[in-house]
Image 1 (cartoon, rainbow, N blue to C red):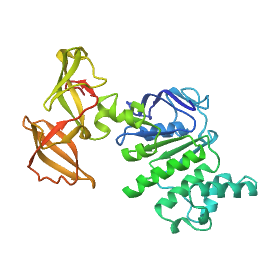
Image 2 (image 1 turned 90 degrees about the horizontal axis):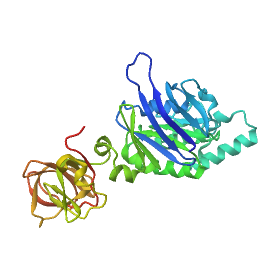
Image 3 (image 1 turned 180 degrees about the vertical axis):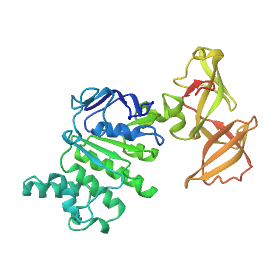
Image 4 (image 1 turned 60 degrees about the vertical axis):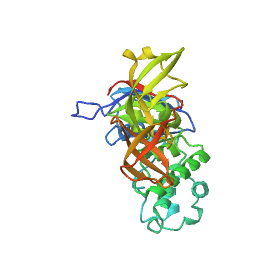
Length: 356
């Protein structure tokens, strides 16, 4: 692992609770990691600790096998060869694009500096903007200039702190895909902070979900969605609800009894003995629920959110259980209407009944 964070603690002076506590993860060279979580969860503090802007109170951070942070070691930020891209881009308004990008390599020989500026601007698709000033660029172009400037000195690690937060939603997701391509082309190792799941999924090889200073899971996007390690990750990633269920053994297989009927022949299903009396909560994602007019189970439409190609329906079963379902948008039912639904679950995610 190129970046290794092990049992890291960061505590601000005068605070009883650590802003980052017992965080451990690793990032391979050339990979892009993303930290995601609600506001105040500690993701930016963790990024600042990796950058060298916050000191570690416990644990350690290693870059390329060398310890840069621990309780008794602190390599200053300027000696870590780390590039940073901020929310506000931090471009110098009085400098043109070329000089903005060259700012961190001003002491290079002029021919090497000019070649590097052209190279990184070529990566971000802005090689023809060297003489333009930041105010003449769009928000997306300014962001790409900031990325080019951070890449110019050949940092061993690039850190990005919510770099798309000032852009509109459509541009953010598109730019996330573009930035991923740029970072991969540059062979850069990067750690990215966002609160937007679509951004995280678009850009990250590995994604870490944080809550109250702790890292709940460090995994790829598919595993976070389908195999959440904690109840918080299950609730935070994607749309879904927890439904009461009972695990029972039938003919040597586990059957999951729910208000939607029995779920059978499911891979990776825990044994009934995993929970007292087999009682648990099962995670039902919106894409686990299929609209089927012929299904025996009916549900009332409480809310619907139009998503273009689909609706996100919030539904209530006859017993009062609330669930959600993705339904193709040509199924435009009225609020209060009852529709048929069925569960189509390939594997179940279960947690202790009523657990936190």
